[in-house]
Length: 626
Image (cartoon, rainbow, N blue to C red; front, top):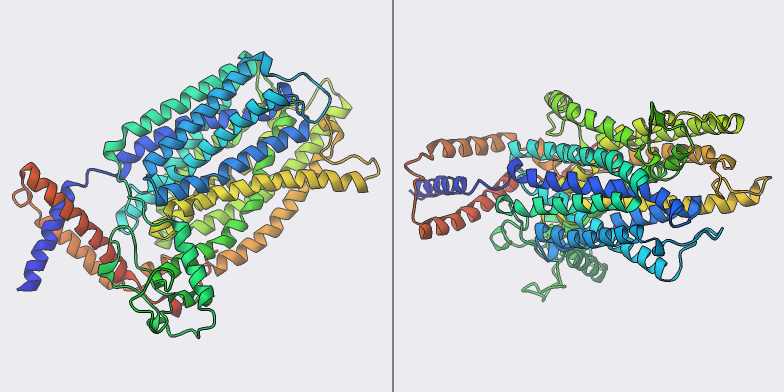
């Protein structure tokens, strides 16, 4: 009798949950897509043209312009960690994005004011940088605000959109994969407008006008995002992820002399004691066994007190983040290659033949080439390739995220090799006949190949870090993809400086490969080929890291399929029994109470799905994914 009553209550809870199911899904992500498109329209336009703005207006030389831009981008993407941390621990993701959005807008306004006022432009001085005093303060303060705001937005925005889907539900898991692809498409569409229309305004109608259009586009994007608040599923912040990680490390070190017990003897709280909906129970795995010592409850320490013992789930959260680090590290070189397409390749294009008929094509608009490739290929990938591959592999994404990243790494190495060949041809033509330079569109080869690489890698990384992350660290983990970009840009700065120092000493001409004001006197092609070789070596490292990595979802996809199917049948039956009569209209007070009950039951249902599908990960060997 108890089971029958429980079943009725379960069916009733599903009925009530259905009444609150109007939030989330693609209807909610439409507002996220709006901000992604509009903000990228402004952000990418500015980042594409800044290297020329630094040279033409701020009087920087070639390497200083390139390094200033890569440092700015590196700082921006590193600050994504701050946005991810705040949205996991203190504010919900919507409010985090809006606060950092305000800082970004202020930074854009200050950049626009400085570009407008000629009194804030330094005179030429023949040095590597001519900015000083109040001009330098205005420039670097506005760039710092821009980096802080844009970085914080990226740390929380991707997760805000992904939160609109329940990755434990089979159908919504497919929608989650599609979300990342359509999110990338919206970013590319906005970027195409930015690097063409807005860059054209900057280059031919005044820098400040282009910057003003970028500011207005970003502001409109935040208005769109805020207007979607009634439709969002907003996850409440939980414990600080940094504190959770620190607890595991500290307790493991404190217990380092204890012998490791069997897995079933490690400390774990009962499921009813967990913070349902904001914390998931993770099964024990065999990797990084040293960390298991944090889950040893010393004798005489009961009941468990904070900082004396951690649960198996808390230990596994740290293990997951640790397993991700080699993947993060092996994608940095690719983003170092990306930095060259936004700096030196733009400077190349500025010296090439840029006319199309009677119109002059701005050099800063060259990135439109890979963007167009991505705009065309992302729908093809989502509409045709993913369903086809899904039938063969059974994976919701068609191919695994790490397979997708691997394809991008190979293509990035090819792109750098091609870039070196094109630079040789460009420089030879410039030295042979300066009046007839090579066409700008020779650069489309390297840009096109890298555009495809970026489509595979960046989107694959965002999906990988979100899906694999513990529930309490989704934003922080997703920020790892942006952290890889950050390290890539900073590494580009290091490479440019080191190569100049080394080659000045070893070359007969005593001139660095990337030194001075004249690109035709440099050896940029050698730098490109250096990156191509480094990318090949990095790919070998990636193959090892990817084959060693064990997906968190392996446990849920490969075992207990009959049980999972039984639960799916149970859910289907419940939905069929939920008629209009049984889920009729109620008073406002009853409806409010029942909606609260429904939320709790919906969260418990998610926990049940996790528990049913989980198996002992420690009994499995790491699976190869490439």
